[in-house]
Image (cartoon, rainbow, N blue to C red; front, side, top):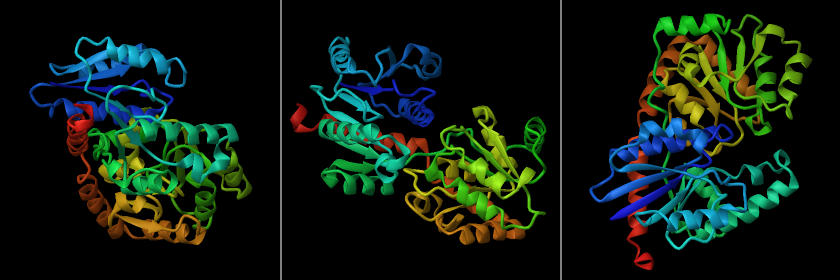
Length: 376
């Protein structure tokens, strides 16, 4: 019998991306578990409502309120796993802060190397901790799943790890991301006071997201262009995008929408005339896939994982070249036929990424790792 344990203690509001990853992965794996296989999801007590709908004959829930940032987890988690009625045959951590000395095979999910690629975005102490804890996690893991080929290559370049130890299991858009009705789009535009046409960026404002350059590039478009709407969580440590918009006197042409309710995101993507994503670095670039799944024509950077995700279904540009960003936006805004073509291709491209496939690949890793002679 195989008893897999997936640690979802980091699936919290602090890590919304991990939350989406874990919940979609569990939901898809629940339908693919074979006879004699069970999955236990470790979660904090305040997140039970998010995981309760995932319960099933072969899916169990186990509360653990020990923080992944706490040294206590190094003692608590091994003890908790030992005390389970059915002994676990594998432990999966979706984050590199995890127990590092378990007497069972470990699978680790790897996302990106932002602290190394953009050291100015974190403190020196945080960079040192990332180096140290990532090395510990890599050493503890029997197998690592990277969320894109680009992320896998970054991991192999940055750390000493055997290539055969790292495989790619790409992410997917949540099934609720699909083109919305005209009524839903009108209702959203009314509620958020958005115009009939706008260009959308969705994401946080951290420096690697490249918003200053996007705003500068947008400022070169004619004043009659649809406004640029910048939506997503706002980190007050990085006011530069708002400063750039004020410096260029763009006024209402650039609107900072702030955080948007998760339930509103499909309609927001669907209502956009176009979606632009100028990030310098992404482990996967899920907003690009979500936008495509909602039918929005996409223009995005030609670096890191983004060409891998976008394929031939987006206009790609050099994120370091404001003129290239301006040109891509101008092409989108001036060509309805191009927008229609990109929308059609984007829907087809997004359909290539499914959580059922991700779950199947992950379970294959679980089964092979659990069956390794080292753990028999």
